[in-house]
Length: 448
Ligand code: SAH
Ligand code: SF4
Image (cartoon, rainbow, N blue to C red; front, side):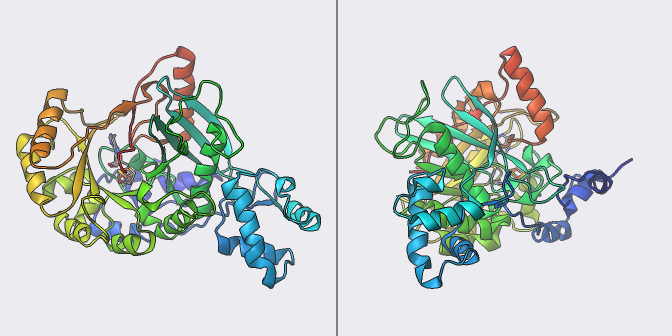
């Protein structure tokens, strides 16, 4: 039987395999503590987002420091860097410029030099699917990282409501963790996204929905009507574990929240983690975003199975780290995500224990109806039980919204985001052709 490692050897497009890939290939479903700790450092391959289809490097998604480096490379004197970066920043991130020619306040000579060396290309949108309810899902191909890489593909989902638009972004291709109810965790190929690749997801979304000063949304598009930006909130709830890629996630948040450019408030950016406790303090100190915790169980024995990182950082450690998260108040609560699995974690007693555990933490609890996927061993709780659970939590004083299914017709569900590209593409194509719908996507925008 070929192992995952064999497959990687024969597949020039394969990203490096991780310990969990090998374990999965060998039929080991469960992870040991040792495996988990190795996993935390297993994704070291760095992608160079900047090499685009044209072979030049794109400036889109770069941080101020990275832009300075690019200017230095084409001989712009250091004393001009700050001013030139401010100009580029405005054009790239405030106006969404797609060519250097648009940059009218940059001298012709420098514009030509920039165009010679660099581009403003975006990663390629391989497909866009639009749900009847306005939800959009993009399959995005990142530029190749070398001769044997055809470019990592990730998914990004846009969920419009009347008073907000939420973009669900990915932080990794696949995920090394193996939460037993999550499809993304079954994906073999895993690598970290660069900060530029994370930022580029918002740029692509704004291009597609016309969310730049001089742009208009596509005919008939559903976008918020409150006069604000079409993308007003970002949630790191796509593929990957953001806190296994903290450097790039934190750098990306710096670009996303910069007031002179993309300008998203950090209070409208939510990072969801399965519980990488050692990185939570850093996230609070360096990014200061809203925090969401994938809790899903109230007892360690069950959480060990559902969210295996629990074997490394148990519920107590996790909740202590939550209590220490900076800036918590009633206006700045932690979201606890809780997937509703029939007969597994959805009893009244579980709900009461949840309330007891969260005592003293400014929290809201987001109940997520389980999204089944081919081969998954769980069922979604009955609707009545979800309501009973929600009621118990609500009566104890916590907001307990149930995530509304969105975009059922475009296959863009929580925890199901592009597992195996080819398979999904074939399935999505088939569904489009047949006009049928299967899984749903969930409304995520419940932070501020
Ligand atoms: N890795 C991070 C963020 C991505 S997952 C994390 O785990 O928090 C985003 C959310 O979707 C998490 O709460 C995750 O537990 C949930 N999820 C995963 N698979 C799901 C499924 N099949 N049905 C419903 N929610 C799921
Ligand atoms: Fe990874 Fe999150 Fe899925 Fe767990 S739920 S496998 S951490 S993406």
